[in-house]
Amino acid sequence: MTHTFSFEDRRSGAERGYLLGDISFSAIVCLVLSAFTYWVLQPKFGFDDANITLNYAENIARGLGYVYFEGGERVEGSTSALWTLYVSLAFVLFERPEPFLGLTGVVITFGIVLLSIRIARILLRLMQLDMRFAAPFVAVLFALFPAFFDWSVWSFMDAGLWFLTLTALIHTGLRLIEMRSIGTGDGPVLGFAALSALVTVSRPEGVVVGVGCSLVLLGVGWMLMRPRIIAAPLLGMAASLAAFAALVGLRIWYFGYPHPNTYYAKVSTDFLPQVIQGAHYTKSYLMVPGHLLVIALAALGLLRLRSLSRHTPAYQASLSAVLLIALTVAGGVAVYTALGGDHFSAHRFYQVFLPLLIPAATVLLTMVAFSSTGVPSRGVLGVLGVSAVLGGIYQWNHYTTPFGNNAGEYRIAEGGREVGRRLNDLPGQPGVAIFVAGGVAMTYDGPIYDLMGLNWVEMAHTERNHRGRYTNHGGFSKEVFYRTLPDIVTPEQTECTDTGWTQSPFINRILGGLYSDPEFTELYTLDCWNGLTFYRRKAFELPGSG
Image (cartoon, rainbow, N blue to C red; front, side, top):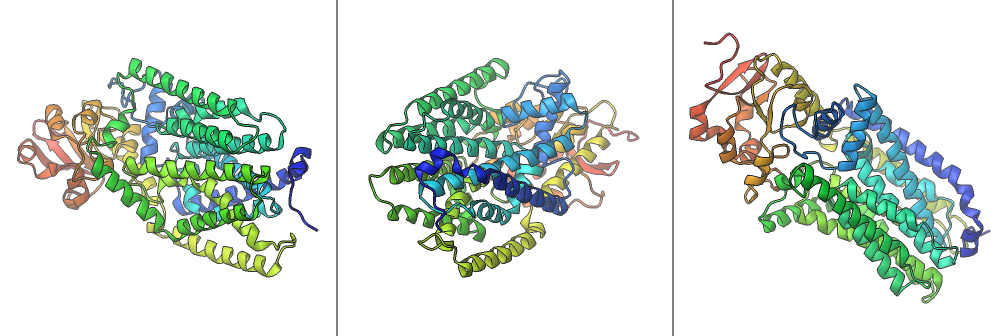
């Protein structure tokens, strides 16, 4: 008995019986991987960069404004406007919202996995393939990538929200293609427009996704689909551009600049070295075996198009769906390459494509697992099952090693909060300059100067040529530093005798050799106090000195 689905099956809603199974598989893989990554990482406060957003959100909730510290300048140092608003609401509801944000991450990730399964079902249905194993195939492939759950659940950054809004947008676009191809109505036109606006305010690059996906949908609808898809992509573009215009207008009114401050701190005016850095980022992503596996499976799944009769609704709809996914991924790679990539492990930026690549990979797994008569090959299913188990064991075992996960990011946040608590014992709340900007800001009550410029407007706008440095850490300017002269510079929670951090090649590169600069050594001295080692401005005296 064959279990392939026709367009008539879709019209009758026969596939609805799969929904409970999809929810079950999504819940299982989400809970298991969330628990596993929690056990490995032991997160408490999210990433240090997430603590930057938490800090702004707490200040907003307290009525202090969008500021890095009480009495400081207005500065948009958090990247996602929508996520910052959500975390601000969490601070209104809870004094310490971290457990609530963890629960939010679990719910968001569940939604991502469920949408990915539903995308797989649309692809399988359009390509007239058996759908019985769509949910387990997708769930198993997700289980091979524990870092995805690290990012979407426990980082407390905007990653999970970004993954969810983009996946939902593509899912809605695919539903539009399918429903128009079988003549069951216009589809979720308003839903596509609403998601185009949401994805725009989820990340700064969201406007490219919102407008780009609308253009792709308009193009495939015009060239391939009969009847054509016009209303949804036009409304999507309008909604995305309107949301972007409103966001830019609010930024100019409140901050005085059209982009987040993080943009000016990270994006170099020297474009070529930034693109080269982005190309290295993309290359390193492709060198990870798991990434290559899912990309290869997804690409080979496109071979199914060759077996469909051209000029039929099934072929036209399938090709439209493939183009929407493929061009979204290709466009995203181009954007992130142009922006210089990222410094976080597990390739944060490219994690967003996993919920789109996995459904395409499921097409190939289904083709391999089932014969042309629709009867599953037990031998093939057995081989796939054993391979999945062995691959999962390898991936999970690798993830437990220090180089396979983001555990250090969570420790940085915890250490930063402790540094801030100790600095509060200093009299007069001296100005403190740091380059690990999140945890300290959550606990220190005095002025904080972010040497990377992410949360310091003048620093971000002065030095925009990042040639010869890490392009994502090129915002430091000595001129701005010497005009400000913070009292405490880069405090470290270490013994007085441990000064190895002052010789760190990474720190010296991103700070342009500040520690050995003659003017710096004339003004500052290495000192220690209350379990902290730092550079102290000589004119600032510590308690008990002098």
